[in-house]
Length: 170
Image 1 (cartoon, rainbow, N blue to C red):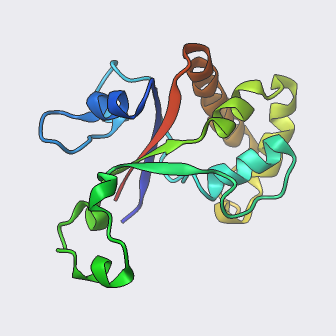
Image 2: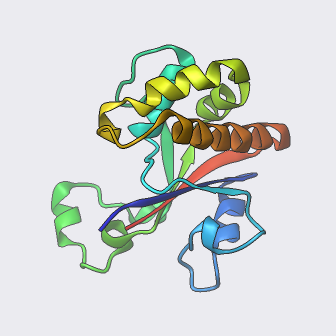
């Protein structure tokens, strides 16, 4: 079982959840709900490590835990377990165990991606394709396509003064 990630833009948290709610109170994936959402299907590219490594390359800083800051939007923060013991007591079907999850990504990532020089992208893609997490299974041309998708989404988000969100499911 893999973890899937979709990235999308919305004006704020409430709008993000409204975009993804098909009436059952659980956010469905933006790539699955049609033309109403400006989204990017990023398959296995998580926001914290793999996308974080890309952000590090764009900013010319080493990757570190916390380089990409996010805030959980779904499940609701007030239902979040406050300890390991509380987490272990959750029912198996709890959204904290099963997802989906929606995170709001800080504007630093959006602005860095939106402001990157297009001429630097092939070099960045070459470096990103070689990160440990891809384990040799990413080529630079595919990496460049993915990066260009993220950059375009970030530019549209910044122009509209939208935030970026990541929808995750198992």
